[in-house]
Image 1 (tube, helix red, strand yellow):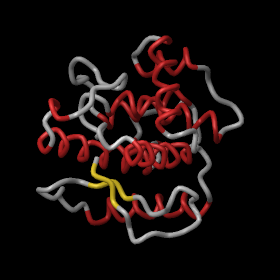
Image 2 (cartoon, one colour):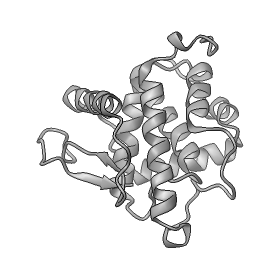
Image 3 (cartoon, helix red, strand yellow):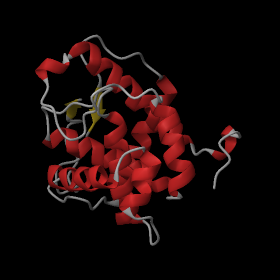
Image 4 (cartoon, helix red, strand yellow):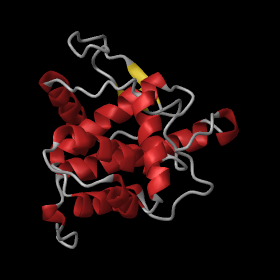
Length: 195
């Protein structure tokens, strides 16, 4: 288990991803009223009191998945948002989307991973809810789970650039970058997703 008191033991990808998703959620909270969005199994009745960064650090500490799973989880979130435009990431759903995307990434990427009941405990939800979230997430992705090395590298680079420049979110909307088409082989003209 990682010692979260020592920030040097937390991979930068966890910090970068949590910062990006926090900004995306806050931007969508202010730019798209919850009344204009489709409610899904990912939405909580209230905003969780734990920050996105603390939640992602908790997942890192207890899930014991590889740091690459967090990049793949980011790819999955981007794909999910692209396929589900009426479900932008916001403060009511970001935590459930995170625990689900990391769990699915760990199952796909790592040789050893925990079961849904364990992830449910880590995420602070019931096992039944975790099961529903996983199924909904997989169908929302159309079971498109493969991530090519090129796509993986592109998302890593985007996260690094995002954190280097730390540009404030635009007034119009904050975007998650999607660099590739569905087959992950053809670069596109930096297609962007409103989340």
